[in-house]
Each structure stands twice: as structure tokens, then as C-alpha cells.
Image 1 (cartoon, rainbow, N blue to C red):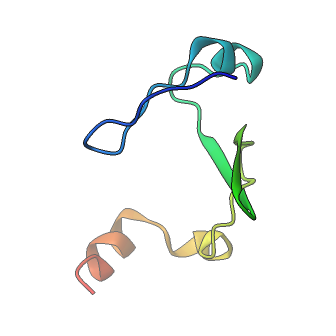
Image 2: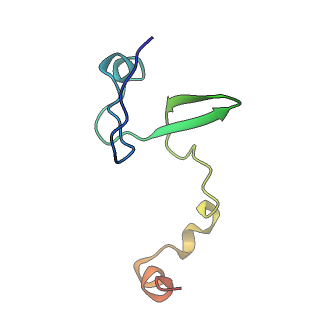
Length: 71
């Protein structure tokens, strides 16, 4: 079993054997899946995250963010 500690800021380092197994590198996103009493960590695939706003990408311009940023 591979373990790591949680810091006071709820952060942890992903151990090297895990990074190697998942082919993780700086900037990669990680996906977490909760299944009953355990969490499964995987390397996130681009576009695989459930983004409820992904279908509204046409409203994601700099002007839109400026206009609606304080709502």
C-alpha cells in the first residue's frame, strides 16, 4: 500500500509510483470518483469532466466574463 500525508491545508503530494503509473506530469488534471467508501484517482482526459457549462462555450468570451463576472 502506498500512502501520503495530508497537510493542514488539506493538500498532499501524489507519490512517485502513482505519478508514474498514471503518467502524470506538471499541469495534468486528476479526476476523483467516489464509490461507496473509497475514492478512485485517475488522470483526467481532456473534456471528460462533467462541466455543466460546456454546452455554453459560445458565451465564454472576454466580453461575456466582464459583463457577467459580478453576478
